[in-house]
Image (spheres, rainbow, N blue to C red):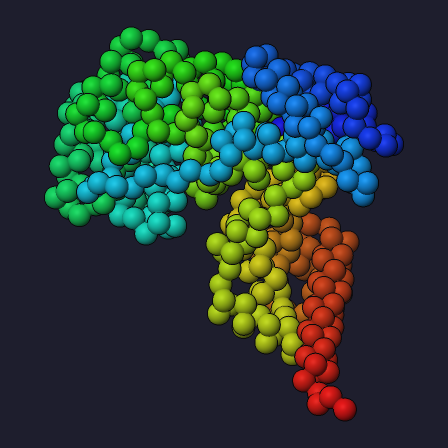
Length: 442
């Protein structure tokens, strides 16, 4: 995400390295490169210029402490201004009304239907909502079927009238159905077009008037850059939507939409989405995104993702097994599955400060665990629970059964043994430290 922009901003700030103080000259040189980086990311020229002018004004108005390098000070100012440009702070989705009605809008191909499924999953699991999905796209072939498949994946019912070609009537009937059956949230997926046209705008405006949604979310493909911003403005002029959703952030996005859309439509980015998994939907935090763009990682989001999949009872069970040096391959496999649930592995790793650049050219996805899972699944229950029985003949059988090489099996077992020893040793150290702390003082 935003790799080219991050690289160019990093190069821009190198101009100040070794400088003793911030001056008009070295700030101008640096911000000229920052402006170029923003323009290359498809940020509107006027917005890019206003941004760098604001950064320069604040930089020149600050006294730099002797313990702080000018480059660090300018990066901090840039980071704060970048977060402000993208909205300043996160904005929650409105869930008022009974039921709360959420209308999804956007062009065809922006990812509206997939987002609708992700939002249903998010609201059901994180907000405890009773959600009804509504198939309001009556034009795109297989749109209704796609929404039904997504609904099954997230265990959320889908309201559809396959013979009805009137999306306004479908939306009205869906709201009545929701009230009758006790759903407190209705998500209406609507039709998109390849470009903005009068028919499309009239239709979605009619749906808005008919059901009076609490929230209208405009879904935009982040890879389309400044075109996405222009489209958002046209939609907002007609719909006056409440927030923006940026999809496909795992693709080759230049970043222009994320950075400048707020300043054009004056509506917050509420969600960001990447990948096809239903779990890959995140609330948008401008400050965290600014950190990621500037290569500072996003530890807070990484911890939050881990906590979502954290099972306290399972953690206690594992801690006891580790303390007794009984951690086995079943436990190891369980931990791999937990990590995979958190989302795209490369994106997760990029949240660690400094890791984004280091893993850029490394192919790191869910397939990275494929061979490990195959090897463990080729073991018998006895072998998984008691790795010490894994002799040469057993390892050879496991290699053949998993379609891997004997060297891979040996390497996994060696790494597993080392990991188990280290975990046990850390537990012992923790116990020792606790015992020392509780000893009576002389």
